[in-house]
Length: 267
Length: 240
Image (spheres, chains in turn green, brown):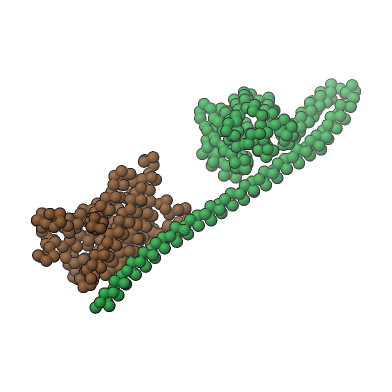
């Protein structure tokens, strides 16, 4: 009987200890395993994001290269041909022309000058020479004045004068986003007034575009940028992701606004 | 050491007050808190009666206890038999924890329900034909309950392990409660299994010693429930 008692007490003690060890060990394994799994997932998602950023960077760079190539060809080839045509055109002896031909000649000359100007304009827009030589503020101001010239849109530009030396990628990125945003406003908003302002605070470059007419809310922007026809918005978002920035759309009856926030390192 | 023995003897009562205090102060706003809270209140009341009747002589409440709990009186030798409360607490615990697990682990609610129904059927048959609910410490009921609770806990932990969204199980308030329950059920499985045998046939001193292990695990369970309540309150936006 005594032997049996020793056995049962020993068995119970061992049983309790084993169960406790099993339960505690099991819980510990689960917690550690879950932590490992989560870390692995985090690393995978980071890898995915960096891969996505690399793809965006590649796409932006190739787009920029393509723009440069087209701009150079337009300027050097089409522009040169047009200038040559203009030179030949000016050598035509107009004294021998009758009134009707003279009118045609003058009209053609105006159109030719217009074509040369347009090609130059397009070439400059596509090429970022102005941006490289004079900086972001001048390039943006120049783009706004050139784009909105001759329209009935009332324009106001107030850009922060803080001397900024941004890296080339940021410069081009911000410039292209502003270009795309203004083109969108002109195409879709039916605006009669546009105000562009910029400020720099806490190493954040903030561009604010205020305009009237048909605005876009943040929800609408989020929906549209995933649609196949929203290529412009997709490009804007890709550039913002690449620059690690943020964009916020606000829509109201009186005034719509777009805030663009880009982190920069002020030098 | 006498004071330590007294503290341990009353641990089933004061231990339940820890999570109840946390509940009153922290107000954890989670749906799973309700079944746990009901279990804690019922446990507190039943364990208070258990300890009052057990300590009635030392407390000088023997006459009062005999009058109020006359239905527990089994004779001059044994006096008041309070084992019915252990049986009732076991049944309450399983039912409340089934409710608790049905809330936190919805994917397995059918298993929870089926096992709870089977347990009730088992309890009815056991107390109807084999054991007396009033006087028998039902090792069968308590062991079955511990085994079912362990299964529920393992199912929940398995579910947590499958969920890739959960970064750290410790961040889940209910995981703390489940951890406490897992340890409680694991430690007490063998205690419940052999306790009736120990108090009837074997050395009673060992049985008393083993019951202190139960009481310690009960304190741990209540501490884990308190941690769960604390975490739940911390995650509750109304408390920020």
